[in-house]
Image (tube, rainbow, N blue to C red):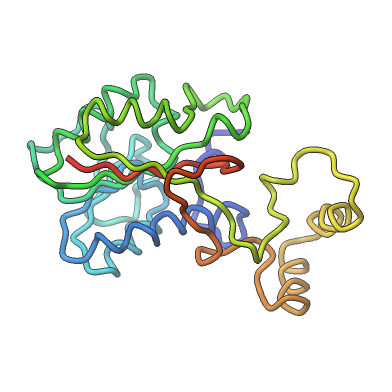
Length: 236
């Protein structure tokens, strides 16, 4: 896996597209009229969602090339932000914490730039789901490890498990182990087809995309078993 592959592109054909957009969609309930910071904003589609929801959103990313072509963005280290104390009402940071060498320092810095009563919404892989060998992940967390870390800097913390809805029994991250059920084998065979072919087939047979879109995920508070990702909401 290359660094470019690890960074989610602005690509609706990606199996991760709906999963990642679902996190932004969940967060939009707090965005309208707020000053928002998107840490590790990457390709910028989340920034567009936040702005379309009526927020004043800015993005920061450590990777300068990823920021080209975007307005109101800056190159910055999440553990040392070029921002005054108590600047933002809401901070989002999705699939970032596992990449940084000092997660505690990053969270303290995000707390510093949040206003009193502000929120941090972040996601990270659930280490209890599957221990990965991703070379770009410095550390992964269980739900309780993540809660304990966040509680060092925030007064209120709620951890959610992210799950596909019941409409999707088969999704790539659940299908990496050997499966011998006929339907599971059939899904794996069809998943090898070019995306336009399998996506059209899915629409014809089920009326929905091949991969779950942003509406096909749910976030369950204090429910983690079988969740491949964790989403935390923390308040100052």
